[in-house]
Amino acid sequence: MTEAIKSSLRDSKTARWVVLILVSLAMLTAYLFMEILSPLKTMVQNAYGWDNSQWGIVTGAQGYLNVFAGMLILGGIILDKMGIRFTAITSGIVMLGGAALKYYAFIAEPGGDILGIPSQVFLAASGFAIFCVGAETAGITVSKILVKWFKGKELALSMGLEMASARLGSALALFGSPRIAAAMDIPTPIMFAAILLLVGLILFLVYAMMDAKYDKEGEAVASESDSSDDFKISDIGHIIKNPGFWYIALLCLLFYSAVFPFYKYGPDLMVNKYGVDPAKAGDIPGWLPIGTMLLTPVFGTLYDRKGKGASIMILGAILLIVVHLIYWTPSLDTVGFAYLAVIVLGIGFSLVPSAMWPSVPKIVEDRYLGTSYALIFFIQNIGLMGIPILVGKVLDIMNPGVSDKLDAARESLKAQGLSASEVGDKITEMRIAGDLPNYDYTNTWLIFVGLTIAALFLAIMLKRQDKKSGYGLEKPNMA
Ligand SMILES: N[C@@H](Cc1c[nH]cn1)C(=O)NCC(=O)O
Image 1 (cartoon, rainbow, N blue to C red):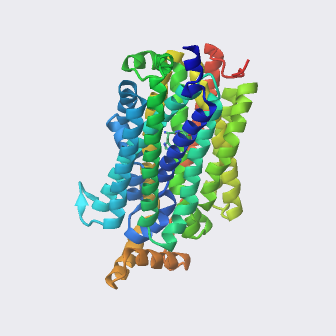
Image 2: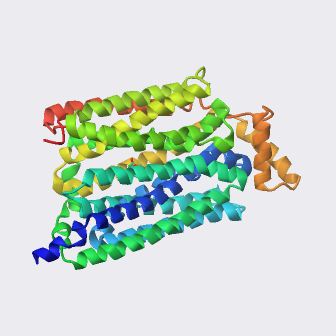
Image 3: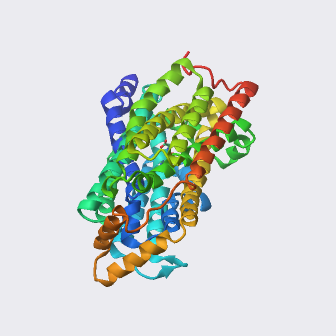
């Protein structure tokens, strides 16, 4: 029996690392699709005539089903009840289905309205909303997979590497998508990213085979019966009575609202404020995920060894304020400042998550951990939905007439028989030449400044609560 356990898959270092590679690459494809449209805002608007509010409807679709239909919570329950294999494969299929619908919206260019929204916008938003249900569920499933295979071994390292791989997916989308769209057309990068999701699904299927073998070996019984990662409705009552939970959940909402929506609007800011070529719109924001890939493990190790978790979150929030102030200040309009701000953002975006996620187990009891993470992601999704919508709306309000002028030019080009891609290219040329106006982001960017100031306030409150409740956030994680 002992021999059988020793030779189990879990004890095989090779098997563990194969699992890590499989799920990390699957998450890379998910994060890649998540940002595939983000650097194309200028091109999409020039080609299809979406205003900023419509862009907000599509990019904020992340939360429609996850928040309003409670799909993130349902995903947690399904993971708990149906297990890892079922949930991983199902989330892969859901991501692919959503991606296919989003691709259809761009390739078919459907006319008319659905529920008062242009059909193309409605279908692209619906596809993204469905994709995000799969992506968020895949995220919580992969965390559970890593706990299953790496608990008591290289767990923190495996989580860090999986996150780094996911960030690489975001970077590939930001750098690659506009280049492919400029060389081919807008639907092509979306199609490539959808094909990669199919590869991700195949990787989950291969993982499921390994997982089945692992379970057959019988060793999983012990780890599966450790229910600390499970989602339980009954836990919610206990968790929401804990003030520390609220501080960290709201900090997560504010902090991520100031960062992930930056992917959706940052590339267009680069074009409109810094005069970057739309085919390279994602290049400066693309350094953000690359920087975090390298820095998050460094700051994570620092927190493990030296502690100061609450102080790290305060410092991260201060850096974020500096970043968004740089992007907001009208006179700081040279590309050098855009790079400087993204470097500081990279440091801030590495500091906060490296301290935030490992702090949750210090605030809530182990048995509530799975439910707590699902609830935090649920609250985070409210911001990831609301902020892109708000930014789009405010941008339209602050730029009266700009979308109308672009529309008029587009209509006259369309009347000359040009395709959407050709219209987009012409409008881009006219905007670069100054014949058509750009969007002024100045006042709109104050939304991000406000979010980061609120995040700093919450981080300070969390530190105070830590002193009061003795969570030990300032203490090292390692003895
Ligand atoms: N909600 C998840 C996944 C995600 C990524 N982009 C939008 N949602 C999350 O925030 N994971 C943590 C991270 O830092 O990526």
